[in-house]
Picture 1 (cartoon, helix red, strand yellow):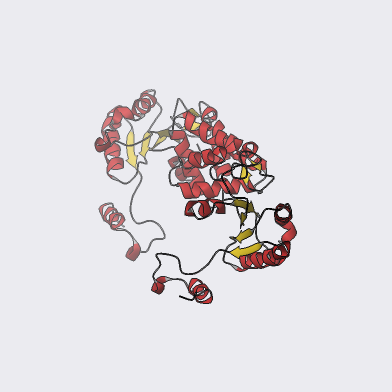
Picture 2 (tube, chains in turn green, cyan; picture 1 turned 60 degrees about the vertical axis):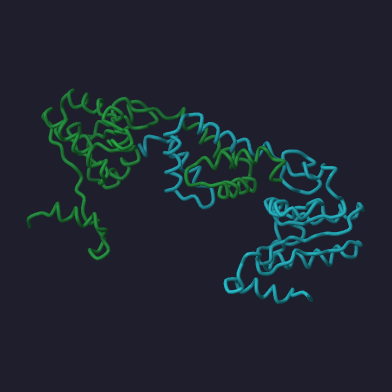
Length: 199
Length: 199
């Protein structure tokens, strides 16, 4: 086979476009597909092909969602007083799963990174400012990553948003719950020391 | 997102059907798709969805191919005197890349495995016998895997085909070229001893 089959080689080439999937894995997946009932390839393929048309950017929170405004932005049970700012859409799931936040979200789609040429104008910062200027927001919880870019973004947002009369807070970073001190990574211990609290 | 988005969750669920791709990887791939131009998801998805309809089983060699008979079965430059028998379609590529075989192929689609309930009737053995009975074949090169199932299949084929007047040979198994004896695995060394040749 391997050369007859333009269709098979095409599938291998297409699957190998996914990050972390090399030609070897793609070949394995393609041959696996051939051993399944034809519906399997059709169902997987159609779900993938239909993804871009099925998703929109929510005009309120900038999340990628099935509807605009998204389910969370139109949920009347959520508080309008707090907005949690995340770098990526998938970060929302982590906050939601914690069960500790019941406000709205805002997705920046990145973080400030001068080295990569990403400034505030490349992020969804303007949309966030507009939401706060519209009133009703008391607190902005910045949930950017604990790295250089996330720190810079948090600092930038604090300076930008505080003058608008909102509290700007940031997720605490320190030793992960369940991690023994002995096995905690250096940066987490450094953050834990920095953010130590009076008992 | 993560819950609005039936389409996204659907893609995650579909990608997670692939062997070796868990929900975490599937989620990462789906979000990657969302960051690409829409053509990317469409091209990948359509190639995958179209695979089953694009492939047929070659009625001669039982390989999965774009045409029937397949490119190799209809290639006049190949010798009809030798048939190389493999377990899986993808095994053909390994033989072809070696450049050492110029005959035809036959894909069994498995190996005899009593423990898994796979007998000769579950493999494309009948088709192989028919090819040999049609005449012109001098040698059958059995290229099944060097494991219990591959060995059993090779033995079975030898007993079945020799009475038809063909030579039945099997690929040599031993220490892989480039492997130092010190690092060769036990089974390969055992095979190398078993198959040792007079110099």
